Amino acid sequence: MTLAVDIQDLRTRALRDLLAHLDGSVTDQWPEIADSSAPDFADPVRAELERDRVFGEVPFIVAHSSEVTGRGQFITADLPRNNVVVIRQSDGGVKTFVNACRHRGAQLVTEDSGKCRLFSCPYHRWSYGTDGALRSVTLDNTFGDFDRSQYGLVELPTEERHGFVWVIDNPDRQIDVAAWLGPEMDAIMASYGIGDLVSVDPHTYRRPANWKIMQDGFLDNYHVKYAHPNTAGKMLHTNAVALQDYGRSFWFLTARKTVDQFIGQEVSWSPEMEGHTIESCFLAPNSMLLKHATHFELLTFRPVGADPNQSIMQMRIMAPSVQDSGLTPEHWAKRWEKNWGLLIAILHDEDFPILDGSQVAMNSLDTGPMLLGRNEIGSHLFRRMVDELLATAPAAAAP
Image (cartoon, rainbow, N blue to C red; front, side, top):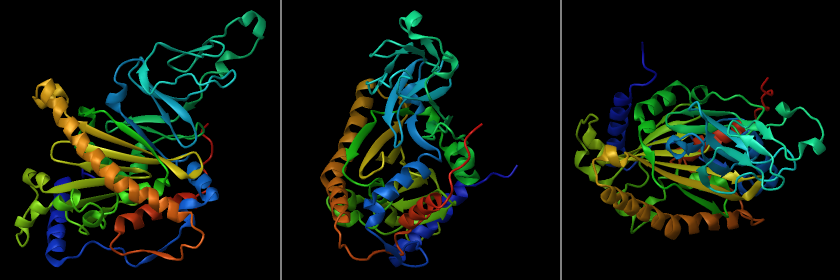
């Protein structure tokens, strides 16, 4: 059986291309400069289309599997179309429900996470099983007769794959994560073994910026030394990317400055190179997965409803558990606390002010034409994917 992608060959080719780029001060490029337009980031009509034709049509990541490990363990999340609860089932599967009682619509769960045996509405105490079925109606002898089987919690299409929980934010759709990723990206994800790791203290941020501005900021290798001169810019190369396009999603390699020792050599990929590079996957429509030598990072971005000026960013670190790491619990906790501290400092002090300010600028009425350079290849591919989804008619409802 032929594998969809030879990951070692992919890495070797990308590493050689990256070293050549660094030697020549060049990078992978898009065929031409493209126009960029402020209304793409500030128009409420477009924002509504993105809510429905992107997040209401295709799978995206809402959690790492370790965040809902045991029966009845749940998290809540604000998705573009629905506030939801994601909960582990008694059979080991995962389901996602709209977080609203089917009586008068009261929110069932207000906690960010927890564990329960049933959902109980705080308004009139109707209750639902963790499978979403309506279990009890208070004072039902006076309420009246109705078909209770038709009034369970509204369920969204959900699939667990590659260590993540994926959802389509529309109950009338069907989910197939492997088909959405495509054979190459699905094979790359399978090779990572992320399901064997644990999610370390995920962080959620609500930002006054369009979700695409946020996503662009973390696809962009062009800004590193300019926006982060005293932090990431000291460690990472700027404007040097070796990328493989897989249609909707793409894979790319960037360089730490320690890789310079290999410039001019005919090297092949080895585990040593993990310390000199960062391997990244853009998982359409809204996620960046970064592979480091010791862990993975996942960054996801989604709009707040149809508001073009608000977004939710979630960051996750996936790492070996305390037991698998061989570290003491204290050492393990200190390692990831330090790692989070560095990430948050860069985000809050350097990235967020620029991205928030970009959204302010996008709401100006006279920004003038703008440009996307050939060197900004990841952003070109991201825009291509979003534009294709917006141009596609909604799918038929699931049977």
